[in-house]
Length: 259
Ligand SMILES: [Zn+2]
Image 1 (tube, rainbow, N blue to C red):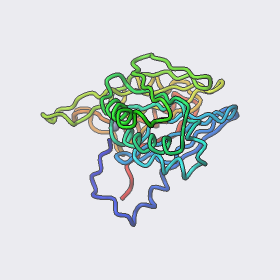
Image 2: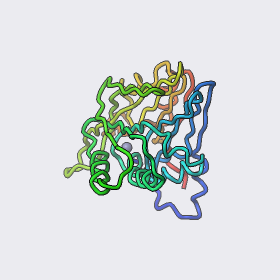
Image 3: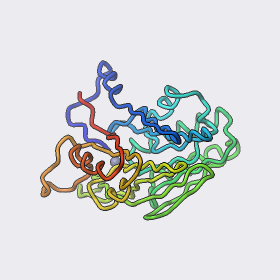
Image 4: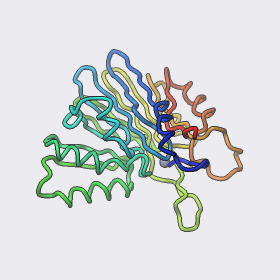
């Protein structure tokens, strides 16, 4: 979740979000990041060039608009799995809309959602949706609670999860609490694409990105805070740039917009 400190986003400023897109590709995989802004939403799409099959990292608010603005509606049947890094709204809030669109368009393939073990936000949305439309949902939705080192393979994608350290400040006492949070490494052909999710600097974040062909790294904080300044919730741009050196190439995402 992102720290807006400078006020509300005014509609006049929406065009600034155009600065938060990225793309990357090689012979085997195309990575499309139509949107990733801290505290708003994140959508990261990987396409296998062999098969056209898709895997989605995170489903923040606006995911449906992001997908529709970057491709045709083929994603309705071709996305599987969806990997959710953690339960903050800017990473999971678009699930209901995406399910609704898939139901409306008549998806039939089962959909697998990979979530951190104990991610109550994702579980609540998924179970609630299945209950609501139990008799009219044309596809199955399965969720899989992953932890350190868990794997999940489809015919097209091999996913490995790594636990990372991401604090939430949403406790009654105002003290921090570690969220269930994962980074992912996905193999497409011989290519490894890594995604940190939200994390502070920790050994898990290093494990996620090390030797990846492409590492997608959150870089929410503009400055690296004093080590004694309390919980380190996110990576700074400086930390993310250092971390990126462990990978062959990297992209920074999840920045705080300039308002
Ligand atoms: Zn977060």
